[in-house]
Image 1 (cartoon, rainbow, N blue to C red):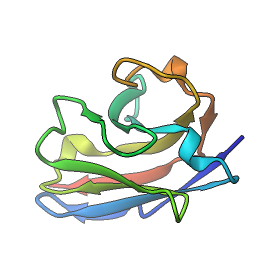
Image 2 (cartoon, one colour):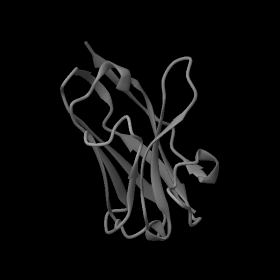
Image 3 (cartoon, helix red, strand yellow):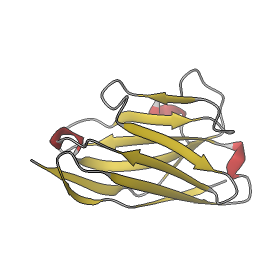
Length: 125
């Protein structure tokens, strides 16, 4: 079992960058694929990015491809989301999640068993 805890959110101007971190407790972090999701006010939660257990496979939503990069450090039990060229439409609460399942793409939120509390990202125009 793991418990994700996000950090690194904040307020940034359009075109700027932020790096989110997700530290997960537990000694079996490398047994979980990790994902980032986001939810904007009045909208459903949506997939952002995911990374496999080893980090050798990544997947991104089309809306962030080329701007966001997901990575992980299994020695530190941490997954990161580097967000560049931020846009106002990226404003949302960002959630980190963990899944023990093997999946094609890891983009379905129903496949994730463990969720963090979320961190707010606000991009001003």
